[in-house]
Length: 349
Image 1 (cartoon, rainbow, N blue to C red):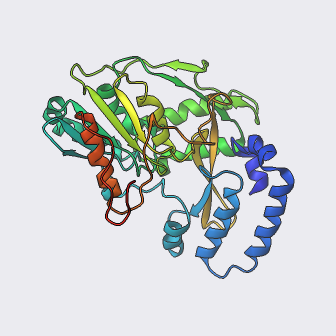
Image 2 (cartoon, rainbow, N blue to C red):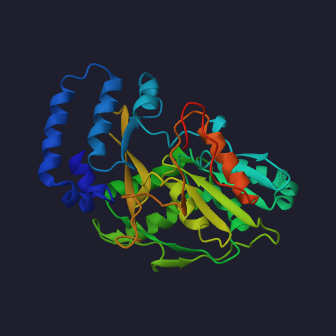
Image 3 (tube, rainbow, N blue to C red):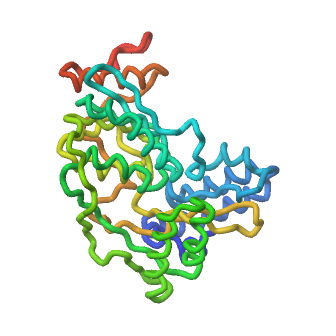
């Protein structure tokens, strides 16, 4: 894996001096020694992912390959779940009071875009009649930026500004982009169009070079037509589980003049992104690695500390704290206190 990462991962060359070449070499020797003692697939995945965390805490992992039934349970225990899109993680909307509603977005996995579009259509009357919105992404596991696009006309009246990425061009990365849509979003025309634009840019530069799909570093978004009646106040609830595309969502919606981020800093896995799989020699496991680097670097890194909230809230400690925090934010939007009620036996938060 180290040789492959140094050649193909968008962040490996940047991170090697930070982590220390000798430290990573020593970790590799330890991991190889421990691998000789591994007795089952689950322990193998744990070992591989623990080693990769020494390179980067997010956007770098090993999972079982599709169709590898023997490892399906091990993946759930040892690796992130960015590929999954279970029905339980569909977007939902709930009316809290006559003035406030909450939209819960547990995932931005590509299949959830259609579900979000359907939800916004079905609940349009409620959206128009409630001036206060809470958007809960505290447990959002990322996915694709396009999945939250249907929500942006409700949140951004002003032209949003984003910072682009550059793509590392290598033969392995080109093959990965050729195959990603068939595996990750079959039948998704937007995915296919995006992958083709990336491939065209990669093929236009020498191997080992960086390519840009958009020449400009700063992108002034066009084409988002804002809703005429938007919420007056929007509170986005965030926490450390919010990573990857969830963090890009935070960077985008915080540009809305009526939007505030509340909670704890996000996970910190966005600087090196656009994950692609590479089949490991066994044919039973894939190494997922980053193929792009944000042009926010080095001025505005996210991986080191996450996206920071506008208002820092206390940690969630008791099982009831998440619901109490939601109630506190609702009360705050309606002119009351943001202090949440203390859980029994836990004193003041």
